[in-house]
Amino acid sequence: MRALAQVCDLARAQGLLVIADGKRGDVPVSAKAYGQAMVGKTASPQGAVAGLGADAFTANPLLGADALEPLVAAAESAGAGIFSLVRTSNPGAADVQDLETPNGPVHEVLASLVDRFAERLAGSQGGLSGMGAVVGATAPEHIARLRSLMPRAMFLIPGVGAQGGKTEDLGPAFLPGRSAALVAASRSIAGADDPRSAAEELREAVWQISG
Image (cartoon, helix red, strand yellow):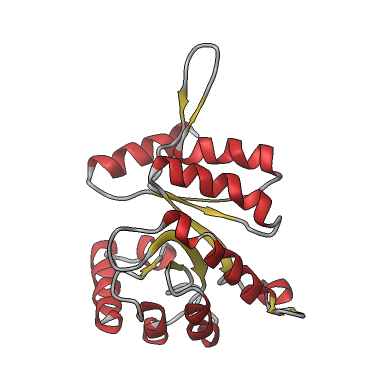
């Protein structure tokens, strides 16, 4: 946690936004504590203890709306964002997230849950919300449908690069505009011979398909 806090401080010193990819989720009382740790403060007899102060964090919605509510409330109070898992990039995502329910696949049910909270974190410009969704690049066949179910959500898109996702498949994620999605890449940049060039190459590729 100390190392993580130092990384967050260094990122902010460089003018960067921080997304804490903790995938937090628990029963409501614990979810409240997770929200405090990610973006808020925790009261104590010695005074308030500050959390990471992240600009946004990821959350696991599988416990349902009542467990997601405290996390959304924490983001709302802090002026932060939250990215709820909807359709992840790992191969095993299909084992659960693509199962059919009376209301469609599980990932579509989760998308509807995200959209229910969108107004709570609505931004002042562009119609986008701080209530976002994690939508993997490795199953691009779902992106257009998920965008239609979550028209206000910012998408956090993992899976490009080492996991095999391709930037050219991500166009539908950007239908609301170029601010509507963030493409995340780790190993393909950190493990490159020239990480700076690899990051710039990805940035340019995403810019080309996002407009």
